[in-house]
Amino acid sequence: MEATRNLAKMQIAHLIKFAESFKGIEVHLYLNNKYVKLNYSDDQFIDILRKLQQKEVKEVFLHHEDCKKIMNRIEESMSAQTFYDPKTIDEQRVESTEAAMKVVKNLINQLGVDSETVKLLTTINGRAMSLLSESPTLHAFIKRFKKNCSEEFLRTILTSYLMSLVIDKFPWKSDPVKEKGALAAILCDMLLEKEDFPLIREWEKNGTELPERIRRHPLDIVAHLNLKRGIVPSETLTIIEQHHELPDGKGFPLGINSSRFNQLSCIFIITQQFIEQLFEANFDFDKRLDILNRLQKKYPTKNFERALDALITVVDR
Ligand SMILES: [Fe+2]
Image (cartoon, rainbow, N blue to C red; front, side):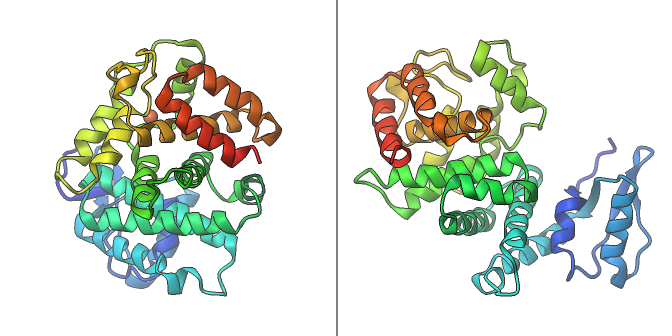
């Protein structure tokens, strides 16, 4: 692909949700090995995006400075006043929360991270958590919103939510700790493609070989997020680095042993695994005890035991 220093790739499907006020944004397509600026008038921005979608175009390219405008628009749409506008139905709230999370993640991937984007991700996560807390059960939430969002997004926010309930069982619980865990849930797989996840599931089940790129993703993501030191909390980076490790030392990327896991990583791993296996079981909550038993066998060490005991008190009520 032609090298470009100031164009960022953006998915039309997500962009379209925040496009109303983006007059003057230049849209580029990548055609025949080069970037082509579209002819457009200020008023037709949305129409152009919709027409492109009809032609099966999934991505456009925008100038970096225009990406900043989009971030501002997302921030505005996530502000309490806009987000909780009574005219907005919950389905739209869930959809715009997913779009916001995906666009911001995509921009972090391409432009790097700064304190504003981290703050925005925390706000977006907070909105997702409030939507979840209004639902009578996790199962009811999934049943209601499954058609409005991707499974990947559901896994992320359910992990974040359940983890916050598990953290509440520890004396050191606090909102900042929950936010550090939530950031890890959002960012831990940001360099992976959709087709990588079944390979990881296969590795978890049968120990099949994984491509080096997938084995390295926790380290690569930490390196990317830590280019500007001090922006992403160190606890979040540790969770990301350890999220595929196992207490028997057979995990990746480093194969660390059980003494190296900190308590927050253990809570994250146990919660993420629980949600993962619940999805495998078609979210049949009656299977939760089987899942907890399997997790007890897979993570038999003291630090994981504490996390599991807390998870049991949350889900086995
Ligand atoms: Fe991962």
